[in-house]
Length: 296
Ligand code: AMP
Ligand code: MN
Ligand code: MN
Ligand code: MN
Image 1: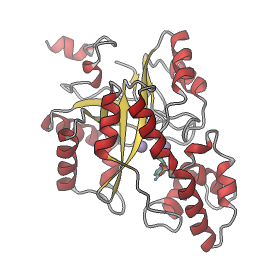
Image 2 (image 1 turned 60 degrees about the vertical axis):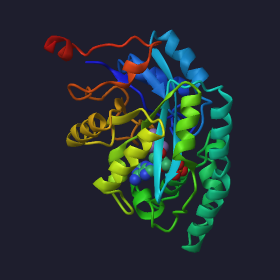
Image 3 (image 1 turned 45 degrees about the vertical axis):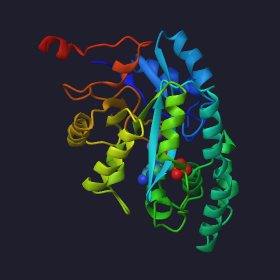
């Protein structure tokens, strides 16, 4: 089994562990290749890489960019990026810029239904205030006793259509892919199964249209195995990947103990026959899973 985890979060965005703690936890769980993919920010990468080196772990620079496509919010993970590339630096800066005002609007909306002081409360839960987001609001609302856990807060207050939800214009899909590619990385559609559930979700036809556009714009891979997917979805998105000639990625999307579907280093292998995203990396030696080797 390959213990690779190419999607997780630290306190640089909305994770609860520092980059050092994330890498240490991954090492303890036997991860041999890790990508840190904080939302819209790459500040944690240097610290994470230094700790990964101490553990002899291969470390991949990553980011997860928030994108608006039609009426949907998509997350596009960039893997093997150069965080210092000017196009990426300026692009991510522009995505982060709207978060403060959005937080103020979310707080105003919640005040209208009688929940006040949320803005200040949410900022207490940030380490990097530039990256204030819904998860910080959710943690505060749990602390303040409005819900029992973060997931319930999203259901009741923060998901699309709920009273604290404020529509927001994120990066354009083509721009996000272009920044990632300009910096030497590969663009990956994160957790596609999540776009097919809940209010305003995509049907199969729209998923096809999105993936066609993603490919046309230079996208390279899709997350097949990820914390929020079920085993049937691993197979489903492996089929999409084959259909669109995309590589396959895997990552827990871990945000912190007790808050995520999957812990670091606890993912099953990609479905048999998948072409893994690391196949495209010449600075990380490609590896053939043992079961595929046996089939050769
Ligand atoms: P934002 O970028 O501020 O809109 O926040 C998005 C983040 O909220 C995601 O990356 C998840 O960490 C979290 N999130 C979104 N939906 C849910 C949900 N239903 N339950 C728990 N966390 C969620
Ligand atoms: Mn998140
Ligand atoms: Mn995401
Ligand atoms: Mn994520």
